Image (tube, helix red, strand yellow):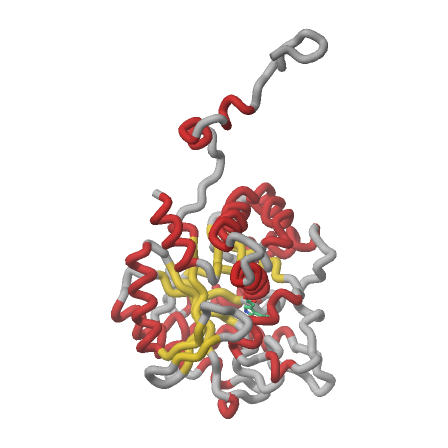
Length: 336
Ligand code: PBG
């Protein structure tokens, strides 16, 4: 039909959208199982399993149960898992000594995972918040200020302990200055030249981390404290590029932006400027929102979760840490 001026539209964008086959042919970005990393919470003991109330579907579990999940991840095609420990209160102190205990929870879990499933990538978190009695990511002075260089020394010991246990990737999430270089030098001096560094380069002081802090039990320790003196101001964007540039110069193999969906603009700017392997973390609060709306019947959870994950790829991310990894992998394998 001609318009009221007697003309046909010069170009019909809807032609390619008309059928599934032609929609598929022009699809620009794809979400693959190979993009997903599954974050897991691990407890000491055996046969231990606890639900995380603010993250339905997510559990804290002991290593024996985690091995079963690791096997499922492998069979679904998920390339790697990221381990977050729940540390017993009596092991937390001001100097975070447990962070580099070679027989601590994380090194034990890493050894078990690598023994049983050597082909599954294992990522460990480098930060002191599970180990400090105050829940900050570093050592503090008498005024409560997080000390940079003293913290970096401990982070290096922690990273080396994890590498010795067999971690494939260490992921500093603490936002101290200079930690990527210090960790790289420490690893190299100890012949861990293949241990990769995934740097949480642009990590924002976000309120979307709330459910995670419940999951690892650091919220009680942190109390009314905040992380504003080291994590980034959500108002800033250029500063993220500066941070990423520094981490790449210091030897990061991969950089990460966190949280995810509220920071898609940062993902795009980072990818455009550096073309480095760029990761994004769909954090606990993002997961909780989607879950809650889905459980209430307010959103189609599967469709919305996959749309959110695809949007990370469109923004330029190469990989995505997501609590949806197992479900998303199941959905993606099904859609095929
Ligand atoms: C702490 C850490 C946090 C997360 C990962 N590592 C929380 C924080 O910085 O307080 C958040 C992850 C999430 O919310 O899913 N080193």
